[in-house]
Length: 137
Image (cartoon, rainbow, N blue to C red; front, top):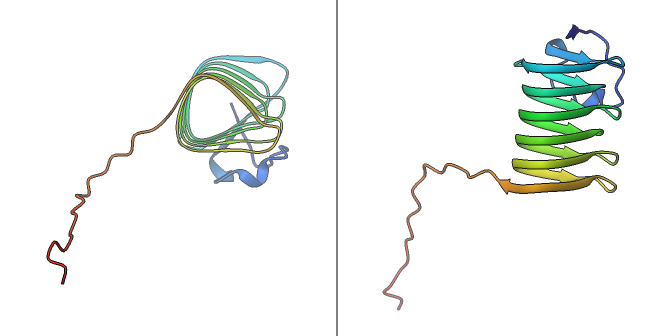
């Protein structure tokens, strides 16, 4: 992991908080488990488990494994078990595997090839009361 001040990704305008952003870059492969409360920009290959507030898979980025994030932006490739509140698949992005999400957006050219895809169940603590006037005059 590299703490950065300058992002070279074409998706840099999508980063929520540049101060807590980590960029995984280079020609190597990261394997293992990583968790952060900030943003991850993945520009190479990561195999394993990743948990973050925001995850950006850059054009050459490849993720394989378990991914939990609030927001996932994909320009590269994601394969595995994904749980995210919001998923945005850009023009060059592809996702496969088993995904659970709340909101999903796909730009023209983006691809979805998933084994299982389900929307998160919303917890609704509000009580719905139907007030209807049965005595209509």
